Length: 618
Image (cartoon, rainbow, N blue to C red; front, side, top):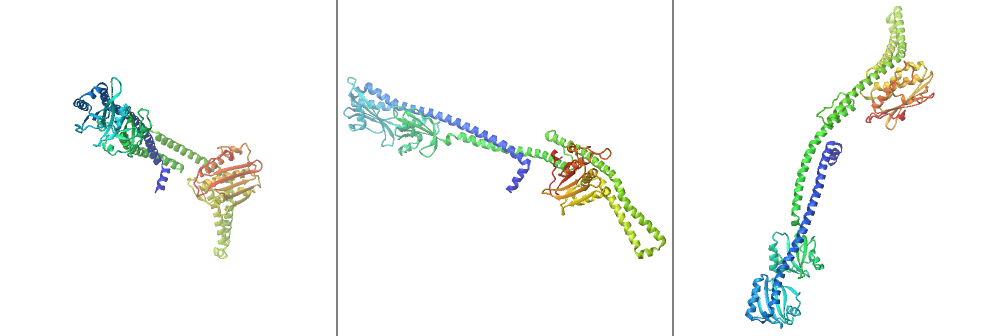
């Protein structure tokens, strides 16, 4: 079934046209859609990358502002009132610390320590402190405080599962500049990240915060922090750990720590050695592009469907016009010059159909002219054959007359019964009948040659046609003492031709040969089968044709004979007949040595193809 479809596709212009229109409609649409989607995707990704960089940088700045602002407020208080606060009463100290808790919403605990590491006051949002003050002399935060390391900070999970930032703020003596003690503060990072997340409700994806070692210290989904999920599988986290330039990274596309393909970017938080990471799943980020692709696919399918319908419509329309033209060409090629191609409209196909009809009329007129010329040549040949036929008829008619007269004389002298008994009457009548049949055969051959041909081809026996043609010139051959040799291959295949046309070709060539032969010359006719043709060769030892005349012998009205002995149409008609049969004719001649004419007939089983006569063949 597939092979049949391919055969139809290869042979049918309609299918080729439809396929071409579909391809032309699909390929540009697909290329245009691909480039549009690619451009839109690229622009969208660049826009998302830029927006993510801006967002991450703003989040880092907000984080620094939230945390840094509260630390700066407490630092300012410690710098201005720190010494006085250390010298104040416990109640006043607690009051100041709780005031700081109230003003700093993300501050969870703050405690005031002296130089010996003893808490002198502490305020907490979740615990009732009272008089439960601690000695922090061995606490790392206190040791960093005494060292004056204001850059030190630490993150940890408290007993409530919150991530806290612990920071130290020294209190210096205004006189000596020595550290007298300080404040240790603990800020809830969970509340900071939640606040940031609330500010970014319109943003897609997730936001989380890591420290310089890639440890998760804040996340929109706080359960991730409680589980202490390892987020170092994220490319942005790894780049932050490796890159300490403090510059916001460019956005990248990668597979994150949880296996999702994301667009990610990080922005360092200056002063804290932290970074804000923003990641947006690709399927969410490019959802609009995917929607566009689906819409383009639907639109493409609709357009392809419309293109198929339009192509089928025009394909059928064009192919019907082409079929009509093809049918007209086939009819003309097969010889039906009465077939008229229908002309519809005023397009190029209609103009071509009209041109084809004009050509058909011109060919019909030309065929009529050629047929008239052929018939005229026949009549001319009949005129030349008349005397020979008359002589051919004279002999059998003389025998008939002599036997009839002798029979009448015998009947006057003898009884008819006696002639019957002797068998002489039967013998006389047999001779008369035989000679009468001979006359009939001569007349029949002449009439067959002179009869107007209908132009219909049939399978004919070349040997029989050669024999019938030679009978027409038998008297002349005998009179001029021409030696004739016939050598026709046995079981020669039939040829597909018109008997009258082939007989006319042979008679023209044989007559030309007889005209060129001296008395006592020779004429050889040979027929044999070659690889693709049946060849008939007619040779004579006549006067030949001059080299300058040889290229002109097939031109109409060209003749080398004396006036009144030829029309100059014989070989031209022969050439036309052979060309129509799909065969060809070759002439080779040498002055004073003779001429050889070879006819090539296509086999009856072979398709007839018109072959032009090359000039070199002449």
